[in-house]
Length: 273
Image 1 (tube, one colour):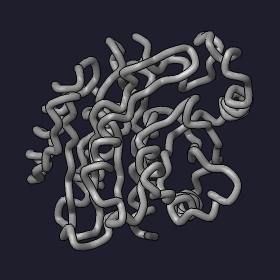
Image 2 (cartoon, rainbow, N blue to C red; image 1 turned 90 degrees about the vertical axis):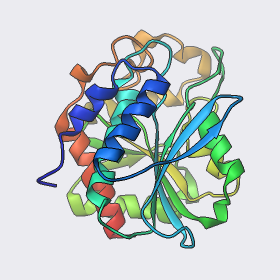
Image 3 (tube, rainbow, N blue to C red; image 1 turned 90 degrees about the horizontal axis):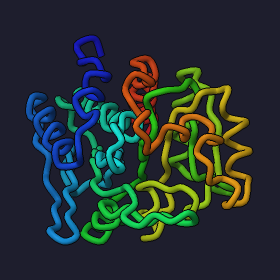
């Protein structure tokens, strides 16, 4: 990774831009790496997913994904320029390889309907699974909130889902790197991400990974155990959720070390697939 560009540079290039402008940044960055993204587009509702393949389509794909759209006028640094930056770094690392990896930058993850009790979004990933055969997918590792923290959060995982190959790969990769981790069961109607449409189509081997500050893990565990109505005051949210979807979700709260930690994890996952 010695010749890799700083991942924070990608975050700052995306920060403060809306979805269409972020898509352009991603495409331009891939072009500088000698890569071309296939565009999966829908006119209504407006969706523009960007897909990068590193192997023939005939092979089962290991998907790494992150959404690039942003909520409202938030700068969207940790949610989710951080995940996009890590995937752009992964593209840089894989650009000269032939490997059954597909990287997907999803559009329209953020909610188009938001109420105090429920949010409905995930349009880009829903469109993707409707237009692609999930039987060609080996597993999905989706990224959210990757720019700050020193502990890996793997979600949503409950009960026997610790036996999922996708979960075991992440755990093995984390152990190799000496990275502490914890798994969390978060009901989809409380918080979800682009792993969910794959699960709804029968691809259970799909999950999301994030980085969390170690000192916030107990508070996060307690937070998600509360009844929904008791979790509505954002000032009571633990990090990183406190700043998500607000004007405070800026790159000043993120760091290169965390971004590189997540990139190294993905490379380790690939090596142990």
